[in-house]
Amino acid sequence: MKRQILIKAGAIAAKAEIDNSKTADAIWKALLIKGIANLWGDEIYFEIPVSLKLENGKELVLSGDLGYWPNGSCFCIFFGPTPMSKGDEIRPASAVNVFGRIIGDPKIFKQVKEGTSITIERA
Image 1: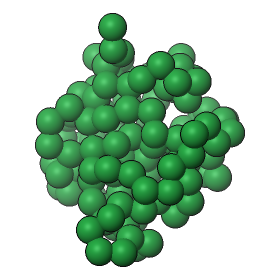
Image 2 (image 1 turned 180 degrees about the vertical axis):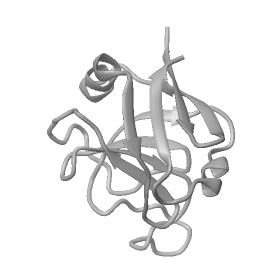
Image 3 (image 1 turned 45 degrees about the vertical axis):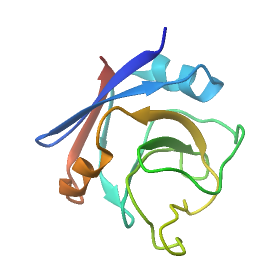
Image 4 (image 1 turned 60 degrees about the horizontal axis):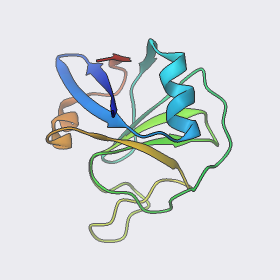
């Protein structure tokens, strides 16, 4: 059975499914996680209390992917191009561990402003 998490950012809430990777397991064990949104193009990222190495790192991701960025111990929500993207691709600053996907339309995260409080919990 897939594990689901609930991501709340201000008035926005979205469910996501996470996989069975080591990254997903570590994040699942760390829940409840709270953070403050940083924006980088159409990506939200924030530091979390999880320290992991790169696991099947991806240089390109899809809209709706959830990633863990080892360089900054950050949880990332991708919903469109970043400053590193060429064209419509979605390119993180450097490789991330993709461990889950937003259920539904990830573009709702376009409404989240820099500095918004974010909570991640088990759904």
